[in-house]
Image (cartoon, rainbow, N blue to C red; front, side, top):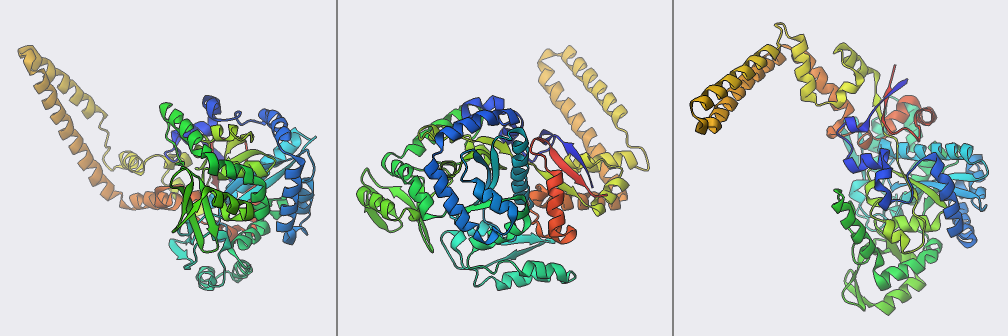
Length: 527
């Protein structure tokens, strides 16, 4: 196994705003607390310590200890849970919606990046303690986004009629999905047994925790399900502020306008009230009708009734994509949030944080890894390509290969030069004859250029047919590395990697490969 890197900006897979968050946060100073680097954590520690109370810490400890009960036999987990009681303990957090059997590769990359950053902070700031936290999006309702896995060019789905927060979904009807999944590994009975031990819990939240803790508990990972009445009760003053003043929309809208003036686009849309009302099988937006009345599904509640419901049942109020980050930072002694594509919308939230005196965290873009398996590497080497070449357009690679490997050398440089000379002479003669014909001369010159280009393309296509095997090899490389024309990590489930290398071995490899201060795309080359 060896690694090389390629600048993210040399690929087409990351937006300009995502790249700026990754490698030039200094240019985003009005939207963040401080740029992410090892040195700025000192100020962030002091800021969070002043704003995070002992009561908040005691509550968090109680909830986490209860939720991690089944994993306290893992010594690093037990140690980190107990450390949460200490005033000099802080967290680094990654979050994501729930997934089946670990989900896409980037999820485990994100969590391991969090673990590795905690290790680095422990060295840099030994007078403090740091704990990696994975925040599960258990209150999300977009089940269609997570109800499947991609395996060996097939899509396997879990079909259920359940509705509401996905973390509460019962696993009673998941056996068919598990059966289809296990059929993909019939040649590996040990791995079938490995898969079979998971997703036997009561609900999806518990199953998600069990799977991830089996893989990552050895590194002291803490998993938090914030769908908890006690945590929401502590957050109730801000929920009340949202209901009474609708402050989040005002602040996010103001910041989004500034982003757009700076040439960027807002990623998340703020609503008048950024809360859902949830029960099992039920999740509906809270919509203000006027100053005193609110609509929830088919029901209408007055403001006083809604606030009374908040007082009695805080667990029924669920922050949406706008308020969830604020909820996270309120209940955790958190210093830094690590994410991927969702990082752009965090830039819309700084004003909202300022209105609640909750410290805005440092932001870090997770590592991205691209795996090159032995079979793909063999094809790349046979075609005499560099590993970084595949991040260029497939059409460019094909054309380049044809030009370099044609039976008759297809070098159009001399032809192109003569065409330019002809265009120049033609335009000069026509204009010399009559200056009013300048536009006509340019038009005819363009026609000549198009005709020559057409001839060149025809010759290239003819040569491609003679190199049909090589063209198919190039196509297979791109299909393997960039499924659905995107990065492998966003499509491929982690399960085949666990089967190939072994679960513990794969996780150990990631621990060695991921570097929280690496800003480039990491290419992992199997040897």
